[in-house]
Length: 201
Image (cartoon, helix red, strand yellow):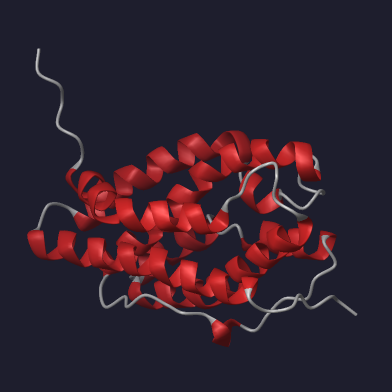
């Protein structure tokens, strides 16, 4: 019996982003050995990026998708972590951003952040021994939606296949945007790792 073919958009995105995905994992090194200052700088980098990225995605999506997109945002968890660690939020203007000229490009970019929510479940378990487990310990962003994350990822994958489809032009746009998103996020986080932390007053 032949195996069912894998969804076209998901497969294309996984292949296109493999190198960039590996590069950002090597940069972040989010494991039980990470120290507080490095972890805090990474969270600041994510805050900088997402503060600019979410409005950019909203601009590229049709209005019918705005509510669903914002309902999946994990920025509130990130802000909770920054407050727990006693850090100030950083203005969004410092973020690098991918180019999002179309709905397909927006979904390619969203693939990166939605996928990071799934990977965040593993990261949260690794961080539990270092910073504690739960939303009040500084790991709320990676814990995210917790047990709901798997279902939300499956829902996103289904929508990804509908919105991007199999058209070669749309697939290429999605893949280019996904690679740019990984690279922009890595660039933004790297900049924060090179700067001193700013404590809240």
